Image (cartoon, rainbow, N blue to C red; front, top):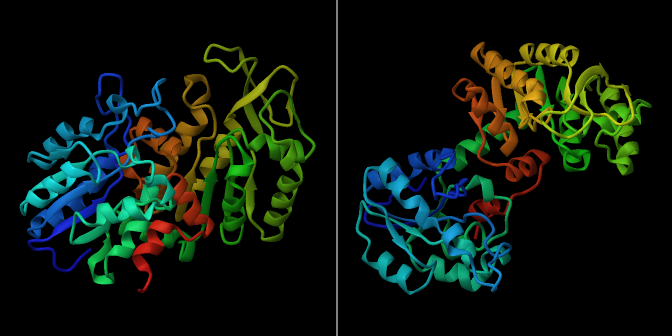
Length: 402
């Protein structure tokens, strides 16, 4: 954080991209809660705070007449809840870098908070437009990036803007610092044994992540739809289960590499299968290598859960990204919920656990175990890219030497 903020106007990029229902009510305020420590510390330092964030993808979901759907994507919906959490009246500018932003930022006093309208209402935001970044930068004296969830984007408010501030005028927020530190601890100095749990639909989305962890993990669990690509690659019959046929050779290579590095690669040996992708489908439990035609694997089976639980409970460090089944449907949620509960149990016994990715976070929250794990990341794509070893624009922009 910045060493001296007294009397200064601090531009803070936060991630308030929260789910909001049709009644304009926030259904999950996790990202807002995670930003509060940074905001409160800056306020305690006698600064005035100008908050910037995006909400959704307004440029891609315009109204039929081509206009921005302001009612759906305005950050004004966040103001009442944020004001309640901070215990003060948060001001709101109905533009982002425009005339109202300029006036309200100019008049902002120490101890006050101003939230700007959705950064993505300006088409230049996602293009990293330098002119838009310059307009935003002119509103404040210093810049703090606390939006890890968008750190992988080369956007105006997350990366381009940093160049308008000297190194001692820009910094990471407390959340960003914590996100980076926890991700680095898993990558650089994991406690052993290390268990990595990767789920989700496609192998193609997790190739680099699996390759990276094969280099040092002791156990790697493969779940979700992508598991069936691995099963088919080994000659199994997977019925109508999800499969990326174009990645069968890659799956074989990953299996061989895991064997070469003596990594315990856990691919589900049994599955909960269904005759339709529906919550009320007929189900049965069969060996994963013997799924009949007309049936699809939608969750890991009990023998697989037992093996996965064992790998988790034996670990001293755990990374979990992606569900093991279609956990949104109760009939196919047992595997994912078992992971959530067992990761929490291992954490209580002293293991370090890092959970990231929207579905994994939703699962741990649904399990009621969120307060028992070590750290829940606010970054989905950002965390994946960081763990893959990529340089994230939002981090590089702060760290670079001018």
